[in-house]
Image (cartoon, rainbow, N blue to C red; front, side, top):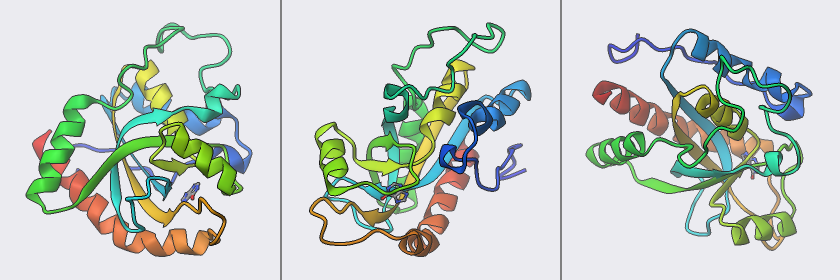
Length: 207
Ligand code: HPA
């Protein structure tokens, strides 16, 4: 129980770059669906592509760019199991508008600055080149990471609603003048985690 609501909390996740299949990466979401859990709340660490973002910021994910899917990596590929969801699921609202509004409200109430934007999902594990990042910015991305998009696709396929937060761990290096390291991602997590915890607890209290 968290804030008097029954929750299933994952300690970490499985990433495609670790060598698992898309199906394996999204199996936890399928298990949640089988347990009739109606809402998926996802979090991730992401690089800030929007120049207004700084490391330590939290971004409400309002939409996603399925770049893995565009290159043929969609967790729904293969025969569709109709009892899980439709063959061609709608993706007009990957992140639930009502839950986004609730997140905005509780962020204000708790005086947490909440950035907003589009999360672009790449497979990783290499970080993006400056040209990759300029492409992502032109394509409308505000943040970039190596997860989340497949899980949210499976959640929507199975009729769950989704809410997502990105912790901006580093600034995208659009001109190649700085390097991105895993260490800075971990370090930024220390200021981001308490903010995201506060937001999720506040959202749960109001759900
Ligand atoms: N790129 C991709 N994934 C990430 C980044 C990044 O800059 N930071 C944290 N996860």
